[in-house]
Length: 252
Picture (tube, rainbow, N blue to C red):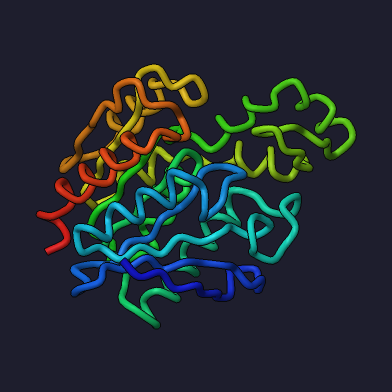
């Protein structure tokens, strides 16, 4: 495997930091990976899944959303809409410089983002969601005790995965304003929904809602006792191998 550090302009004009993981041999297809909420391109799941896919001939572009990791921008000024726009910008960059993404993979809120962005990435033939919420607004349950303060004062500092983040009312309102049902129903791409039944961050019911609304071809795979962030290496490897096997018939 070879890894290349890259940067490209996001939808808001910020420079976004990225990595392109590619197989040593021929590239069978390109994929775009969207990381989980407040995570980054170098999160354990993102890194291991991308590396696993390269073993199957798939090159993967993973990047930090604006305001996170090594990317420019202020996190408090971002929202779900800006994440979706950055995903489309990443696809535009990949198309122009390497090869259009045929596979979209999103983890947690990144899964909701790829569902929302898929219609604007024409070459994508297959979409995979990992532990994704069925509605972006679900993510606000992670800091529900702060919602009243945010509504009254416009913002609040919240702890997420042990780190402080400033959340503004515009983020809450934007997340609540997205209804993914129409996007999922009109996907017109193969969909694989992956979720662990014991996920205590995003409940399994979200996966059922996504799967029920989606049209065929669609598949669901239970991730057994994996945790939400897929921190165990064997879980990430399992996910990568399954994605590669499932997507083979769609990527050509």
